[in-house]
Image (tube, rainbow, N blue to C red):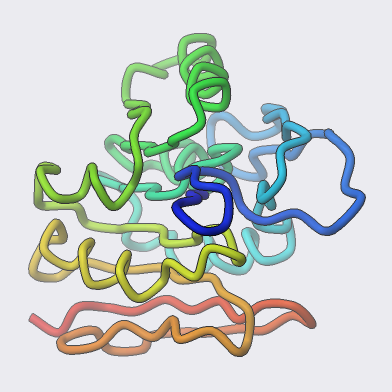
Length: 202
């Protein structure tokens, strides 16, 4: 997940509860199932929970084979790596924090067929200005304190395929609904977050 400007600016990680300690998450399905992904003790790093990921990838499984995936605020890499593990053709993981990006590269290098994962160390919104297009699926889960959903959703739309899918995770009160040609597909809630999948209406 990414952070920028007023709250500490970093395009990375998903926001962590106060007092959280370093640990790991696991890839929960596919040919990399069981692979441990370290979660650094970095403010703003909050990996999507196992429960939410299990639900999300059950929704997405029919569209993953052969998909080009963008994990825009990668952090631990749990979403982008899970997608490739479950059949996506390739994934681009964008992470602004150099240490987190280096860690993602090391993880990808150790995985069989890990060359299908590209790690970009950059600010997500800046990278999107000149990014390649044609992504089939994008994960948009920025750090909650940075409130980047609106600029991220507006910017990522131009990089998506005509029939693309979009995943958005945000606190309940956030303005995190894509506009224009994105139609709601499935959504869920936990005590802290709302998560939803949208499909572009081609």
